[in-house]
Amino acid sequence: MSLSFVGRVDFKGRITIPLPIRDLLGIYEGATVMIYADLDERSIKIKPVQPMGVLTKISRECGERSCIGELIARLEKLEGFKDLVEIRCTRNLKGYKCYAIALISQQYIEKLKSGEGYTIEILK
Image (cartoon, rainbow, N blue to C red; front, side, top):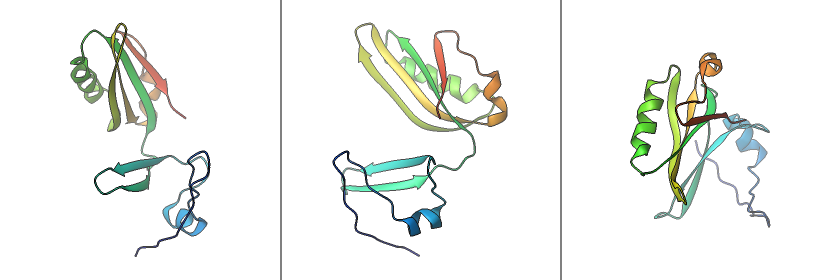
């Protein structure tokens, strides 16, 4: 089944998802959604993120962009690692700042600690 509605973008770039669609997809106020943009198709897809874990941001400043591989390896070794949502590396004056946003099982969140050059932040 598929539904379509015509909406309007407001001055802040927001689009209201119509209530019938929110109800059918279980999207409620404060829910987390994933937004995919297909630049070739010039389309946007919005999917609810299932509450299978806690969104966690793990970041690190490093000298080379290749440290993104180390970040991925560290994530995969974490107890409770469920899924990688986003990963990014940006250049700054000191080198690079790389971060990953991942879903981590709720039961393992308390065990996560910043250290070894990594900063851990629980996203709400």
